[in-house]
Amino acid sequence: MRAAAVSRVVPVSSETVAERLTPRAVIEAEGRFAVADVAVEDDRTVVTARPSGRPFATRFVFEHRPDGFAYRRLHEARPLVTAETTVTLVSEGDGERTRVEIATAVETAVPVPFVGRAAARRRRRDVERLAERLDDIVVRPGGRP
Image (cartoon, one colour):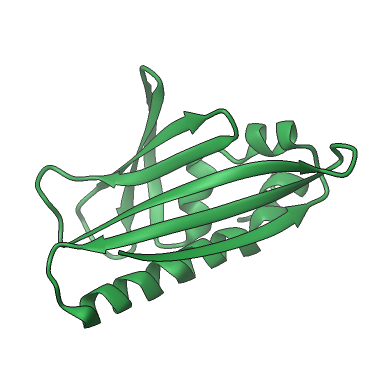
């Protein structure tokens, strides 16, 4: 298993971040998928998205946690690569700033080091893109992520 983590401080409260950093915004900000549908099922949110240039939809499940949320891709069978990402919101100062910590873990079904490194590198770029676009999502809502 390979892991990557990034964090960024945004000048808004953790409540504001939690309200604006929606599952749709997260998937769109990562930059590889266009969201087709968002559905709330019990205590989780399922996002259906289409990868750029591909006809088949992908589904992501978001599970809320007391300090943020976790998400992963849904698969019918064991995939070649699995990744789970957690987003943790930590209030800083007098609650006027929030540290957004994004951690992802990637695991491959085959013991080929190259596959694991490539998957981890790609996932790291996704979460770095999300971190770079946080201001557009939570500080300047309505701006393009």
